[in-house]
Length: 605
Image (cartoon, rainbow, N blue to C red; front, side, top):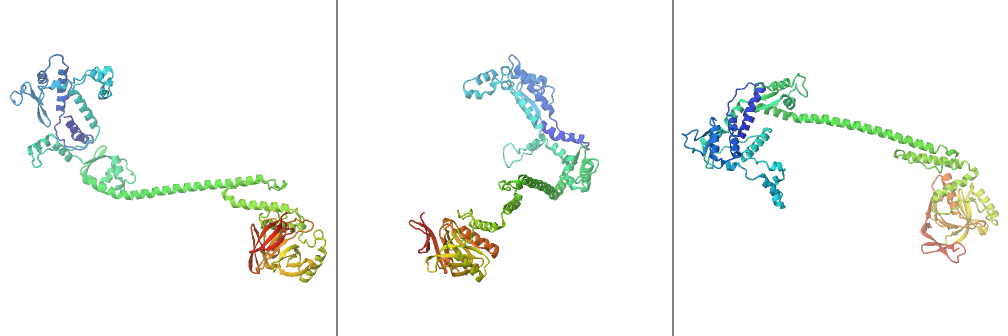
């Protein structure tokens, strides 16, 4: 009865009340309201449940018959209650045993036998408390109600009918705040046959379920109703006067514009706060048009949103680049300020700022840092060089050329001493032969017309017979002369200087030099020191003067190769290899023929 009453209130009564609240013209439809039956069962002090509870709580010998007499007395005037005592002509009921209630689904006869016994809860609360306090964990888990306080446990337990009524009331309250959907099932027959349809039974079910009244309300009512604001929000894109925002005085006027544009004004009704649509066809038409427009609107919104995102990204990128530019300019300026601070007083420093450590440049100034560093080195070199006398500049250039060519691979190359260049003309270095060489060099100068002597000195040379002999070497700005020192420096061979392409030396302390020619007939020799300084290294000087001469006068490269192992050259077109060995008992530096070329033998000391 409670669930049927809820159905009536939600489906029939509430819907008709809504039409009246909204001011919709409506023809009221009568329906059976079973609230009178609900009151018959659960009304306080007068309902059947209250009479049962009162009989159960009464002290003394109270029987089911006494309870029935009490109901006959209190409910005698109720139109939906009867018994054999109230209707003696109805022999389908027995005296002092049966009573009948006229439910919404039909008449139901009840027997009072066992009513009071079934309504009492004989399981007292103190017994539950006793079982909960048991040491057995299983018993304790079976009686959770025993954990209640002593005041709750000692109360008289509720009857079964009251507990059932409270449960139903709680269920109905929970359903009343929801929006339930009903599925009504019709039982075709009482025999559970799939082929039998009992018309009378089906008509009875349709009648007491209130389906006819429900259909009548639905047919007379409206299929769809919605608040003006929500209806406008959903369908405003289907009307040109409401999209994207309307300029009318109220949402109702905007909704009317939508309805008029689609021609649905005969199928709707306007309430105070809601729009009512009678047939689903009108709603389906609006939904179809909305579904057609949604993709277009989505594309439009996507385009607008993507444009907004692109503009936002563009502004952010511009801001990023602005910040980056400002930061880079700050780093550049800070670097300039730091360089200026560190090098502000380099002119007055003893080393002209060579010991000043350069600050680490930002990545953007890496190339500029290299250029400024190079400029400072050049300025520093100029400051150093301008204090050198002009007469020493030629020697300085030669030493710089030697330093660059040897690349630090030869440890001692004579940088700490003065370079004489023309040692054969030096009286201190060659006191016995200098006068004879000076005479020969003047004759050669008059004959060949060379300008200056680049280098001269004694050497141990390998001849074309693969033998080593003492020779004098004279290198001028035009020719290279091989002289016989034992025969008054007689000229044995003259080779144009342009034929020489480079030279090779070792990384050791030996004085071996291989002069390479473009005709693949290289000159292998070992420079010999003079009498003034017997341990003097002259290889570096020879390398420096030749490289400097070729770079300044010839404007061409002169290749220098420093060999760490064997020295490679070609003699008369054949490749040769020269190694250096120290031999005990060897008194002078000399060449010895080997399988692959030659061996330079050095004294052990």
